[in-house]
Image (cartoon, rainbow, N blue to C red; front, side, top):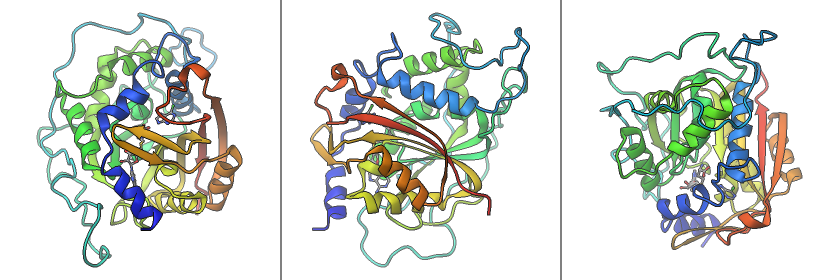
Length: 349
Ligand code: SAH
Ligand code: ES4
């Protein structure tokens, strides 16, 4: 069996709940200090999506003077907005799945992934309040695509202020279903509210967390299947191409070796417009991780491997950060040494 086939088989046992417990509850998701890994990830994302924000500037009274330090209790309002359920939310369950298929490879031609609701009569784009509360950052546009979203939304919390629409993607239906439950406000969904509250605190605009939750739910309108090992990962080109591409802990966790990681990066890069931005988070030095009964192999990457893969895939590096996993967070759910964060850009054509 090829190692790609072995990886696909491993993912059949992936348990979203176990994965969430391993990585998105304490001790890793401890918001009492930025020494913990989840607050570190959220700060990288918040700073990057706020970068290049205009407005505010030198005006000390402006709310747009960069990110706040941790301030507890700011921006949290009791009471919440009713969760709406977009009727056309695509959970991928009624679409062709990229999981093991029989027969010929996908045809070129009309997209087999129907990505846009036919009509959205009861949905109105809810533009974010304009400047000065949310000045546009450098990374912004119509569409952001998140590759290998898994069952998580934390990676979209800062990004969602800067895009009209967010496309979440995953290989597994169980993960797309978990995301759909969160978008619909299903009480059985994972509770991301501590993450949303934390992001509102560090963004420092005093925004009630329920506002951000509502905005992300409103903008997360497509949750679709993907396979990063296909040259056309969605089975069809994305129209229009994405203005930004985000991917967290996916490419190294689904690639048997460095060459496959670089190829996957090239494949997903084809979803991005020239000049578009890439934001990547991932594991350094990891060889496996657990998600319930699944033990998934991971290609162990050094910082230099990540830089080389970005260069080989044709991206210009803008920012590279890394985090060393402290002993207290080495809990046995994986053997990760650290985490990398990258902001890169696809050159203009
Ligand atoms: N982005 C999330 C989840 C990462 S876990 C986070 O930051 O925690 C890795 C994800 O890759 C899983 O959700 C898994 O279903 C998905 N995956 C597995 N095989 C894939 C493939 N061939 N193409 C794209 N995603 C894949
Ligand atoms: C992760 Cl902090 C961390 N380390 C390794 N793998 C991960 N997946 C999600 N978060």
